[in-house]
Length: 257
Image (cartoon, rainbow, N blue to C red):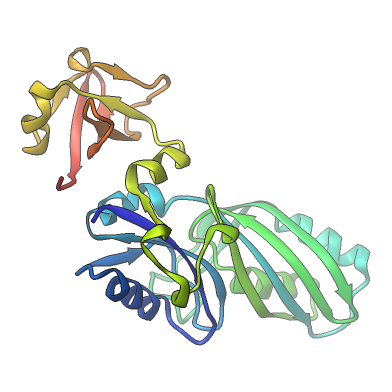
């Protein structure tokens, strides 16, 4: 199986538990998700089944969109809150929280949009569009520290991952074969650059042998060196992921057919 499925994660379940349940529902041995949600956070999870997991470098890098609720530890004038939010829009420096599974070193993340939707005394509804790997709980904590009063995230829902929206997702009890998105279709939606190779090169590509750019049947425009690209056969099936290096195409991950 080489498909992606969009699932609406419920509260009270870890991302790992949800992924395991999805794998069991579809009868596959392996599945992987493209971004962890805390147990109490709900919303869209993009889960890759079996061979589709090899496309994680593409799927994990997609931007995320969230809707949430925060609680300020003191009432703040709306003008001050709006000004503070602007300071946390664009490139920010963020240190992962203590309970994260990654090294706690400062790193740059891009907040594409941070909007205040509603203010009710100390309770604030907000939305965020951000780079993959951004910790929203930490974002709200840092905002509260900047305001000088403190703040905590009380509710969060992921509403979009790249081109995939929560409106397309199914709950666990409604998953079926109709929910499966072929990997080729999913990658097309992400805007992955692709090349097509002749049948004579298929076996070499599957063996990881690099190829020259002049051997390709066709390729998308504006493919830069080091960019992850999809390598397709003449029938439109993806057979590998690779990278361009000068005039050569290097094979990175081969997908079983």
